[in-house]
Amino acid sequence: KMDILREIMIAVLIAVIPICAGFLCDAIHKLAVKASVSAENERKKYLIQEIDNAVRTAVMYVNQTFVEALKEAKTWNSDDGEKAFNIAFKTVIETISDDAKDFIIETCGNIDKYLEAKIEEEVKIHKYPF
Image 1 (cartoon, helix red, strand yellow):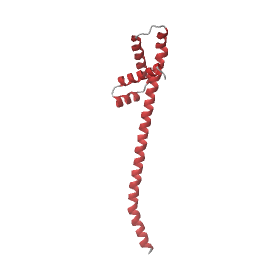
Image 2 (cartoon, rainbow, N blue to C red):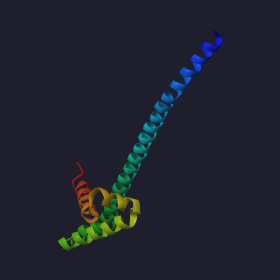
Image 3 (cartoon, rainbow, N blue to C red):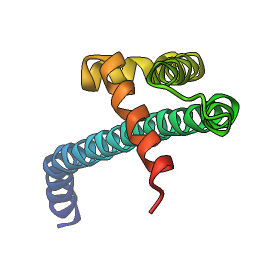
Image 4 (tube, rainbow, N blue to C red):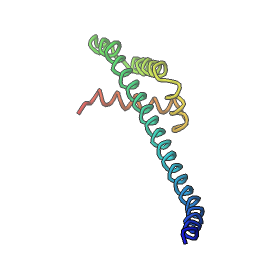
């Protein structure tokens, strides 16, 4: 009687173990995918913050070291606006990492146009800080 019960238990275990292993492997795979997506989202968030901080810092730097002096001297003109933009753009390009540059190119296609828009946006925020 014990031998029959033992044989039945072994047969059940032989049938159940692969099924459970399949579920376990599937669950592990789903967790790995979720962790990978989470890590990628964290990476993207970090790169966006890096770019935003670089743009903000560059605009403030140019404003403090170039723009304010010309405006106080009442010598500011449209050519100076272009110079100020170019200084800010160059500062951002030199400041951000290659990963951030690659991220901009991958997501937006054109790094120059993207940074131009971000710099202009930041200038407007500082010009009209409501």
